[in-house]
Structure formats: structure tokens, C-alpha cells
Image 1 (tube, rainbow, N blue to C red):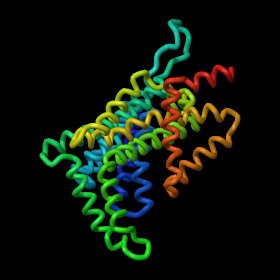
Image 2: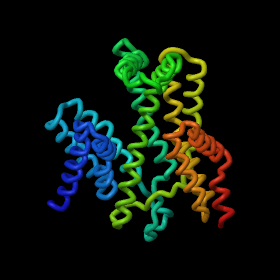
Image 3: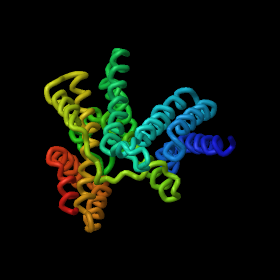
Image 4: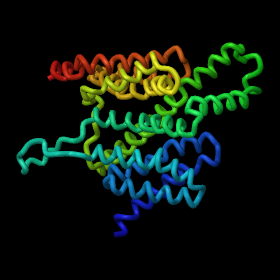
Length: 321
């Protein structure tokens, strides 16, 4: 009994403390908060998704007593439930063939895991649109109010020799308002993805993982994957108001699985060419400092779209064999 519940309790305490570190307000605390789903993923992928869900509920109870109900709810929604849900999907498996004596299993495919990962922020965006609409203001109006207040608070820091001209500052403000929910959804998905990969990597290092680590080269998206993206792009292009705002912010989120598939294509092309991976990841990191390099992300999304229709990874694998 002790050996079963102690890891769950330890994961809950560690995750809750990392999440609560945001009250410190330092850069290190932000990093700890970003990694707060890591213990939950570790227990879920190492002991089963039920254990991960129990740790998530226990962690939210700790946050409730240490902070307040809203913080506990955010912890459960943004950290706990995604870890348990994705771990449940990742641990789905079935026999590779009908031979019951064959121990080989077919695990839940990486491409569908990418779609489930995308569904989490997409559902969050749709929920925010509905809730804000029921309140009467609408999500765009709420985001505009918050962003304008943020820009006003930053007014003194934006002055000086490096200050932007008023027209550029206004354009930056409007762009932030236009894409803020979509960018926030991508950041949420990135947090979930990074922590899941780190947890699986640590478990595999100590031979404590329940399933083999997925290979980026094995990402195959379902046939219907482009249709939600096409609908969102159509809404962004032709619709106004709430539907147009939904489309604008859903497009970057729905590009995520194609970005991961495009990155998998780079991994397939880099078979024996490690320099290609080094160049790709270096450009991705530098793009946060040099906006001119952000085209790399768009190229990877485009590569994922092309691969979806042409099955380039499959052709590379067949040629290698």
C-alpha cells in the first residue's frame, strides 16, 4: 500500500509546490511553474493514468488549501487533466496480431497523440469564446481591455531612445489583441508537450516506462486532420466578429500537428545526417531572438502539410529499407 500511494503523493506535492512557486515572481519560479506538469506525467506514464489522475486531484487539493479555489481550478485544468488524459491515450495498446502468445503490442500512434494534444488548447479556445459570449462582452473585447491595460502599464518602459513610433506601437497592440488567445493556446500545448517528452525520457532512462518512446519519424496524421484547419482558415478569411476571431486564433493551434509532422520529416531526412537536426533546432531557438527566422516554423508546417498528402516519411523509410 505504501509503495503504491507514496509516489502518487510525492508527485502531487512536487507538482503543487512547483505551480505555487509563481507567487515568488522570479524567473526561476516561472521555469518551475512551466515544469509543474512534469511529476504528474512521470507518475501517469510510469504507474498508469489512474495514478496520474489521483496525483492531479491531490495536487489541486494542496493548491486549494495553500492558495484559493481559482488557483486550484487552473492547476487542474492546465496541468492535471491534460497529463492524465494524454497518458491514458499514450498507454492504449492492443496485440499486434491475433496470436495471443505474441507479446508484441501496437501502441496508440504518435499522430493521434499529436491530434489529442491539439484538441486540448482548441477546446480551451472554444470554451473561452462561449463563456465570454455568455457574459455579453465577447472574448475579443475582454482581450482588448486586458492588452490595452498592459500596454498602458508598459508605457513608461517603452519610452526612450529605443521607443517604437506611435503607429508601430498601435500596430503591435492590435496584433497582440488579434492573436493573443491562439498564442496562449500554443504556449499551453508547448508546456504539455515538453513535460510529457521529458517525463517519458526520464522514465525510459531508468527503464520505468510502460510504453516505448514514440519516434518523431512515425507521426502519421489521420486523413481528416486538414479539415479543421481549413474551416478555421475559412472563418478567419471571410467571417467577422466572434467567428472571425475564433478562426484567426484557431489557425495557429490547428497548425500544431502539421508542425510536429514536419519536424518528424526532418528527423526522417536526418537519418545519418545529425547536422540537419542541429541546424533545424538551432534556427528554431534563434527565431525567438530574431523574428526574421520565424519562417522556419512556417516551413515546418508546410512540410507537414506536404507530407500528409505525399507520405514523404513513408517513402524515405521504404527507400532506406
